[in-house]
Amino acid sequence: MADELHRLTAHEARKLLSNREVSSVELTQAVLDRIAAVDDRLGAYLTVSDELALAQAADADTSLSNGGGGLLTGVPVSVKDNMCTKGIRTTCGSRMLETFVPPYDGHVISRLRDAGAVLIGKTNMDEFAMGSSVEHSAFKPTHNPWALDRVPGGSSGGSAAAIAADEAIIALGSDTGGSIRQPASLCGVVGLKPTYGRVSRYGLVAFGSSLDQIGPITKDVRDCALMLNVISGHDERDATSVEMDVPDFTEALTGDIKGLRVGVVDEYLPDDLDAGVRGVAEAALAELESLGASIERGVSLPNTKYALACYYIIAPSEASANLARYDGVKYGYSYQDGDSMWANMDGTRQHGFGDEVKRRIMLGTYTLSTGYYDAYYLKALKVRTLIRQEFDEAFERFDVLFGLVSPTPAFRLGEKTDDPFEMYLSDVFTLPTNIAGIPGMSLPAGFVEQDGQLLPVGIQLLAKPFDEASILRTAYAYEQATSWHTERPPG
Image 1 (cartoon, rainbow, N blue to C red):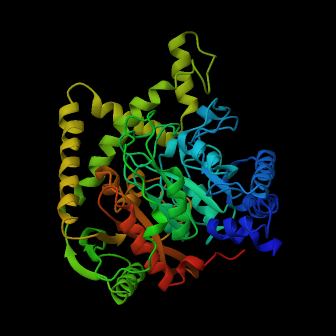
Image 2: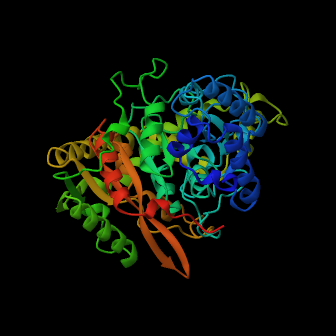
């Protein structure tokens, strides 16, 4: 059994731990052994906290022996490397923060500690969460466990790859424009972006402050609900954190979706899709219908076509403001070979930031500059309102909206790095969700074959604000009727 422990889900592990059939030290060591065996070729982790994890596991065993414990006591968790972890390096995948060790825990990290989780390590990501492939990490790319010559998606690709390859039991990512859902789709795991304001952003290194949200990346839907229970709730340190009661999300996992109204969004299932990818979506719809859901096709969200332009005005604008704090004075990388303070500041940003981050800072600075603010940023905010209104109108008719997460399965490493716009199109189905602030999930739904490689495809489920329960209810019913979530990459 010991050589299979890393394959457990969090709820399976928690049951074994509670029954004292396995110890947290054994489980944690099994995951650490798995990382040692496969991560050299995957690159999912930037930091593995071996000693701390085993110490936390020993504490968890003591707690369990005394009849205590929280929802995740003894369960190894990996965390995207843009969440502050006290005493553990937090790099954001950037040379700018290569040696930064936060003096405090982010809110979600505190929640994980309170729940008894074991922090196994920090996962790789696109620098400052700006990317869709983890090829923009300053340290190394992450490889897709299903096909090592392909990307895992981004920017939370390290967390998704770690879960797909059983290098963690459960994980956290962040989603600014699809950065949880797109890698979850490309790696064949479950990923949920909660409603904006559901989870505190305190301690999440900011990219686009009105778009960022932390969420779970997991092996199945029950784990997703479990993690959402742990991290949700009001935090007075985050002004955008919403003060409202948090339900027990596991209660939504009934398996019954009879009468559920599902709207199929035309813009997320376009006519020019790859036949294999479309086939996965059509099979998923047929399964939902067989389970009793009411499927209505032809739902149009016409302002979706403006979402890409809207996002790439708002997000870089916010990034240009958020990243202004990296000046080489207070913390992080500091260039010291210039002949003046200003030269040192220029050198810090020249050598500390990668090309994609510089590209977005320049784009954001331009759109916020005198003479362009009204033409670009203000207009993007108006489009954002229109996109939100379309979703509001759709959710008056439907409980859940259905579409794809990505127009393609995982693409090859290096295939899109020379064409930023082509890379940005990878998120065309996910960006509107962040713009509107609604919850969205990627759920494994099948595979397509390309060049002899079997590649995962995920479907996307969306719901009205703070109705994650409807997404989880739908996803769980579908998952229990299929076996896609049990598939694991070879090796």
